[in-house]
Length: 255
Ligand code: G
Ligand code: G
Ligand code: MN
Ligand code: NA
Image 1 (cartoon, rainbow, N blue to C red):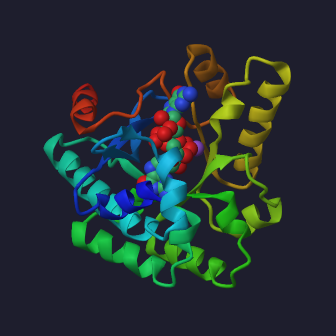
Image 2: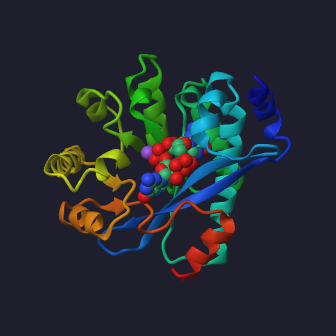
């Protein structure tokens, strides 16, 4: 398609941009990390969101170079911010990884090389993968996850609850964090929705994982999540995803 051709050229033409969204501690309200979210500025169509082009980039294999660009760009930006704002705590950098990226034979080495190039310590990076990656029957999934763990890179499961994880898989792999999908957080005002969120938080804690609630928009949700001992939250209540300039304003309030 035309859009796929455009996508093919978009990296060289520098049409991609990263937005960042804060992740905060519910207990202290402190900023603990940032999730990098890619945007495409199409020369004719304007801003295109990843829901429109990431699936296409996966299909065409273009997610490999695009994912490499995202990771390097986000690591560099993180280092600049950490130095410039002399932040008291080391912020975590969350980067989304598609299953096609993960299944590359050199996936772990390539990630490690970017971390070495940019000097971002391994423990500062958290890879957000989806449940589908864990459920992939490829024989090297466990080895890759172990190699990531050995390097000290963190792992989070994105959109948790929307996939088809077997709890056995979840327990077998070295996962640090569950991110509760925002569709569940959005239904917390109903009794069933509330119980589903509480059940996921308890599940994570029983498996020694911490929890990020996504899509937190209301003070009431933040309060209920805090009472459930959910550690972290992300959503419009704290900040929308913003470009680097907007993020710098946000960071100033934390210095
Ligand atoms: O903010 P938003 O519309 O951008 O994000 C929509 C979805 O796109 C998210 O679920 C996220 O997982 C995915 N996404 C955003 N940035 C990236 C990226 O750099 N790589 C991959 N693989 N997915 C991304
Ligand atoms: O699937 P992934 O969680 O990585 O995608 C994040 C997506 O969710 C982005 O598209 C982002 O713009 C969107 N998002 C982030 N915070 C909120 C929120 O509080 N409410 C809603 N409705 N969407 C959000
Ligand atoms: Mn994500
Ligand atoms: Na998500």
